[in-house]
Length: 130
Image (cartoon, rainbow, N blue to C red):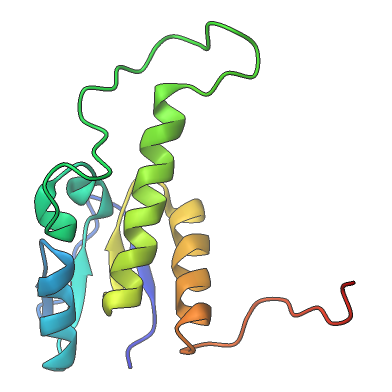
């Protein structure tokens, strides 16, 4: 299986990469042996991402200038969390290239999903936590 790659929105892709627009499409293309590219932010809030109708949607959330109350989450935090969740699901389904403006957090979520899927060792293992 190809190595995990995280690229920016304007970065050029490899001609052999295939773009997917849904989790089902990712799984199908990955099973066929293609290196699958996905843009998690484009799938956030779309019914096509999961095949569901409105589940997990973030559309309509306005990003305020700041939280109304200290410690209250901002709408941008929800959008970032949704993008990270979609990125992890996409990697679990077989995507190997992620196009994002949040490379650090997306890479961490993708590597965690890869470790949970058994495709790479975990970054850290701990024993004897009681």
